[in-house]
Length: 474
Image (cartoon, rainbow, N blue to C red; front, side):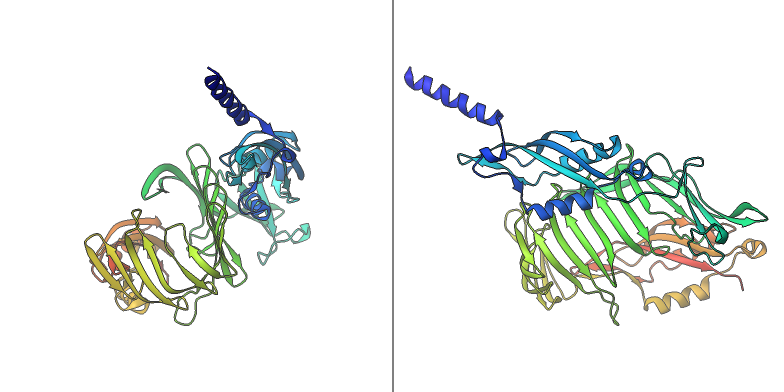
């Protein structure tokens, strides 16, 4: 009977410890972010989405929070102890609550619950061009279309209509100041187009309904970042374009709201940062400008595991990537033997590199073994861009209606280059009408069979291709 009583008391004590919330000074080892405090702060900085209302009101300062770090590294019982504004307080709760990469507190050799306090800083970054009367962001330009804040120089203005969250709601309108009043000059058409957004879930790819929100002019120039949002309004991605098709900056998010990856212009280079879905930083990549041969140098600057262990620092170390591949990095470039294995540890890919350049690769794809010297070859028109330009010049006919109406511009199309070089899945992304859209589609269809397919690790694959076709009156 004594043994039973002792066992029962042990069970009660364990249950009590599981529910007890300890203070940092009461544990043997306090809870800390897995990768260290600086990486947690980097997570907050990258993931904080300062609310539109907060910026319009010019609110700045700290939101103080308290909560509990659970034994599994998640956060519970999170609350605001001192706030600055309802919208800012809500965002602080969101961004801290999504971080699940804590190393839990330890007491008597076991993980326990620990109370913690943290403050989220909202920077001084006010929106000063919001006009509440028109519910628009308004910017002014001089006669050379240069931004100005001097009223005497106002010659053009741009109105970006937004909702209470700062999301575009209608056409972006440009006006010109003539005869002491503002008159329409041009516009960029608003579009909120339904789409299916692809989501990677382990080895599976699922899709969910979403909307793509854009504003582009007749030449398909973008005047606001393109946004993709779920049907409930949650952000999935934002993309800025430096011209009609080339991406400048972008951010993609996991379905839980954590930043998945972003790319930012860093001088002449592009800097990519990837994150795990628990908020732990995964990888920092630098893409350098294209060289004379048209290739881009890609360097891995730093790499971490999902539990915060740093594999690569300053471009050097043994890398174990999210996709499962691993090998040596020297000055950010792959060196020597790199391998990828299946879940059962069977060798799947074996590649050899010299200063980041692939010298030989082998893929063991089910019952097929393929060797290659280039991991990826993009689809292209036979003969390259010069041949493509010549084909279009010889075969494109200016529609009579467009000529009569003096319609000119670019028609943007997308299509898929299939494994045999044929084309399919044609779609007009942006047309100009008056027969130009139909003519562009006709001439693109005539190119079917004239393309070299894309190749990934020695296997021909389908590749989606975007192509602008110009109609210029002479």
